[in-house]
Length: 314
Picture 1 (cartoon, rainbow, N blue to C red):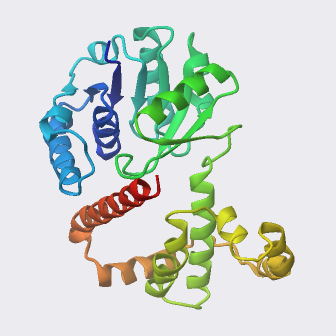
Picture 2 (cartoon, rainbow, N blue to C red; picture 1 turned 180 degrees about the vertical axis):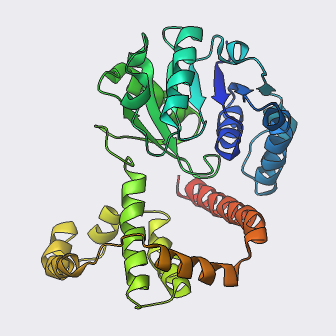
C-alpha cells in the first residue's frame, strides 16, 4: 500500500508538532523552512520530543521508526511534490502567506489540500486569486498539536465541502480531533471562547477582585478539572437533575445578571504591566522555556491517563 506524504512548511514549535502528529500516524513527512538554521535543527528537535512521548507510553512504535518518516527538505518544490496535504506554519503576515500560497498553488497537484495553521487570518485573505483556491482552508491547531488534538477547519467562501470532508478524514486518521467552523469568523472557535474567558479574567484582575495567581487557580483547580474531558454544554447538562434546560431555568437569570454587569477589558498598558510583573515575580523570563517543557510533560501525563481510561472503558 502506498504511504501518503504530508508537507510541513515552517519548522518552529507548531511545525515540528505537526510533523510528529503525521509521522506518528504513519505518514511520510517533508519539512521545509526558508530559514536553513531552523531546518537544520528540526529533525533532532522532533526526535527529542518523540523520545519524551515514548517516556509516557504515547507512541506505539520505536522512536527511530517514527523519526525516520520525517525528512528535512531545503527545496520547497521537493517538499510539496505529490503530497496529499500541505500544512503551512509561517508568521501571521498576510502578505507572506499570500506569496507562499501562490507558490504552493503552482507547485502542488490540483487535488492537494493547502492548509494554514493561522490562529486569526481567514483563508479568504490569502487564497482568493489562486487557481486551486477551492482546496484551501485553515487547519488551526492548539499548541502543541502533538499533545492537544483539536484542529479547527475553516474554509473560505470558495472552499468546497469535499475539501473540508477530505481534510477532516486526513486529520482524523492522524489522531487529531477535527471540528468544522461553518463560516469565517475572526479567531475561529477556540480563540473566541478562550478570549471570552481571558477577557473576564483580565477584567476581574483590573477591578481588584483577585490576584493573577488566584484567578489562575480558579481555572486550573476549578473549571479546567471538568473541562479537561467535557465541554461547557455537557458540563451544564450534568449539573442539573433535568439536564441542560433545567440548568438554564435554574441559573439563566444569574448569568443574565453577570452579563449585564460585565466590564470588558480594554487591554490597557498599566494593567498589562502589573500582570506581567506579577507573573515575573513567580517565573523569571529566563525560565519560561523550561516551564513550557514542564507544561508539555504534564500534557503528556494527562494524555497517557486519558488513553488508559479509554482502554478500560472500551
